[in-house]
Image (cartoon, rainbow, N blue to C red; front, side):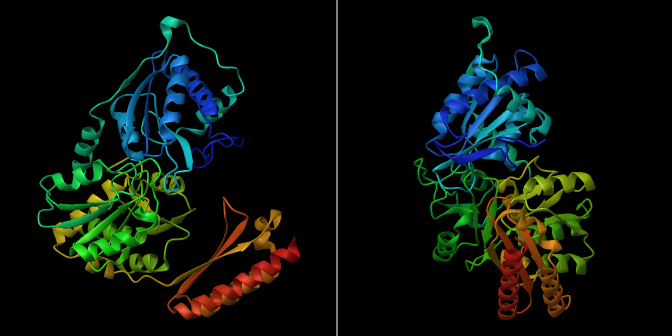
Length: 452
């Protein structure tokens, strides 16, 4: 059974369009409140947090009204990273958590995402029940049963302490100079405090949100200014978060980007050396071939999941492992947090830097990143789903794989959000990879057109 509103990461879109309106959000709050009351009792409570988008005020008020009308108490956190809301939901014994955010998207977008009482994705069954309730006209509970709302004034301090507790007791970052890019988003208060309280000298960047500047030319989607600032300030390294704080990328002392694949490599090798890796590592079909090769040399098991942190999470739980992630910087350390947290992931890397007394550049250099070229090929309709049945495309893939001779990969992946097929080729020689990717993209475009 498919969803009408919920996607793989909640409900998301352009503010004022479709489901991203105050009117719909009020009805969503009421529908969720009724379902949660059925599950958890009449005095259930729900935690609400948001990033720094200007539209967050509107959606926060609408959700609060809908939930209160359904008889649910509301705990308001204000601007907080998405993983902080997951943590606070669990620690405060709430029936659910709600995040108002569109992650790394521009300020014109927003979205609503739910966490369960365990701080994990709300089960599909409950999301289906919420959608079914949206077809009913909202009704109020009796006046004496209406929900109450209160603001949690110390929410920021609580999460700062939680993050600090995810590193080994006694760990300090004294002597480390960091540049921290908060993307004018949800980490703007918490991240600098966490690193400073653990002893680092922090130069904060893009930490003055105005409701409109979230992710605007900054953060993990635009790390160029971070790279420049690290070099300018003579810092040891830089850390960049996205707008809602669940992703992190880093740069070394020379301003070179350290992506999620390299972060996974650093963390996995350190854990393997300590003997606490707890199984293998989960990446995605888009993880760099160099990561797989480096793990193979070290005897670390590696499996690939579909693109998306929910699929990485499913693979980790299925294997009873704890470490996985994506090149985008969404890293899961399930023995530290129930969901991906950029701050927690950065702390794990900083702990390795401090314990090993090796610079970030040296830790990352132990993994060779293969040149990767991706071309988006416009493909409409059912042709996207029948690529594997097209003989010309299958022959072309085999031909390219033969030329790579085991020293690279080919991936054809229909996009889940656009009418395109992503053609990705990896190999040791960048010029050769570019040529092979262009050749294969041409065959895909021609073959899909013929098949359509």
